[in-house]
Image 1: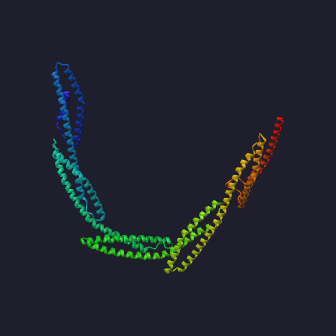
Image 2: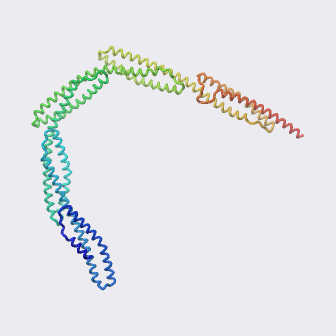
Length: 546
């Protein structure tokens, strides 16, 4: 343990030779390994203490020497730990200074690169070159804004390190590099600001010149296009497309004119007033631009007036064709003879016809629009006035005929619906009466089918009375049966042979009625036989009692 302590103490007292970042990192790693080794020997030191305490407690013959050795080992081990901690702090501080020195050198290199960029960049000769240069300077300015914080952080760290005591000569080297960094940074900011101002001055002139060139080119192209514009003017759609193009072009022309008057011309006047070296060219450009935009306005107005006259006539013809096409589509609808086969189908047809009438009413606006346009063209003394009047008259006659046929069709459908409604009521009434009659019939048939058996003459007489009452009630049921026959006759008058609401027919009901009458007769005979049998039984009982 003592030998190990001597070895570690020698390592901790050795001088630290710092050359670069890699070197300091290797020394720190070695020192960290040494720290792990010191920590691992703590257990060994504790074992020595335990053994020494046992020897002292057992009154070892050399106890004083053992205690002395124990105290020496503990004291030296604590000193080793403290030396290691101090050495570790010193190494970390040297590493921080080395990193700061490396960063300072890298920042100086970055600033020198930007100096070379500014000194090697040529002056711009057109707007493209100005914009490209300005983008580069803008990016450089953004980089410098972000780099400002880095420079401030470096200065703060350098001030902090200079206040601390570092046992190494790298502190003086760091101060020198930091002073050079601050000087170069201030020079870069000054140079960048001056170059940015010069680029702004160049951009002002070249931007104005570019705007003027763009407007001159645009005006020349539009004048050439308007003079050569013929286009297809045979249809309303074609003329409307041309008018829309002229409307869009008019708005575009106003926009360009506003841009010229509010932006380009004032900017040119400002260049003249500030005695720009290109003042003569600027003045000449302004005069030419004013003359060109005025000529373009005149040509555009003349072309649009001609198209407006052509569109008015084509619009009338198009609206007339639209009305005629609509009527052609609707005429076949009102000429059909179909009124449906039942109430449901008739209601569907009525609904369709109602929608049809609604469509006609909605389309009335088109007729009014056509009439209004005709009146407008006639009042303007259009060259085709006679033809316009004749076509409008033909369209209106056809429209009035369509309205009349639609009304006739509506009345016909309503009459058919009344017819089918009466039929539906008869079918429903027959189904209801037939169902009631059949229920009564089934109950009566069940009662008549019961076996006639009594135990006395009185009981037999009561049975006879009930049967007599039932027979008398048949007259009322016969009236209900006749009512069924009358309803069935009404249904047959409509030439309907199948009732969708019931499966009963008069034939089946008539068969049931006749079967019931036969059952009544049989029941009457059964009661007579039973009465005769009970009377015989009474005679026999009386004879037996004597």
